[in-house]
Length: 301
Image (cartoon, rainbow, N blue to C red; front, side, top):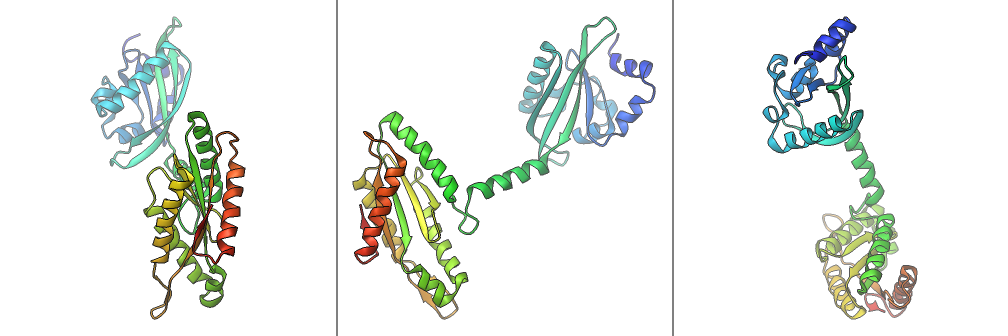
């Protein structure tokens, strides 16, 4: 069979099948064992941005950027070496160079003697699906109000960092931050104003944190700050910096009203001899209670 083996095979055995393929709304193409295009449908020609006749006989290197062509060709080679079905997802660009995400379904076909003669592939645009997955992932990991990690993600990060600290024998501390008198803010100015305070506090903690630190909204007006490779002594210094930053905030509630906020903080440190993140959290929570009892706007450990 010559270069048009698949085209001829379809014509000889399935009259009208080529017309059906050409009418399908998603891109379909077929190649020989030298990775050259034997043909494609109109949807694939539009996807590539070429005429169908201009695609035939060319390789991926003549139609796509080199890096993209390298990936496509490597996967084609693997499929031809291991005949069967191949399915994978990859970022790509649409005909207008807009960012897309596609899933490729490919399979080998054989000639009359049973030898692998080429491959046929179909492209499905899954951009909307991927965007939805990313949104759901974001909702699962981030606090809707403040935009920082939520408690679930913060706990997950803490477990991972504890495991790493134990394995590498490195220090790990955390700070629980509780905004003082937050209930009175809600009662006096309303929950909308309380939300503004929470957002500003979260943004301040996030923007002024070290690159390695993890910050999450731990409860209603509580935040958790995880400090890798940090002892209690170091955590006190960092917590004091945060306390001063929050104390210096001026939160504009209305055009004529503004308020300042303070925070109490409790510190816990991972004991490498008895590593337990729950114990570290209990230490910090107990220290926070102590800070509140002593008059608030201070740090205890």
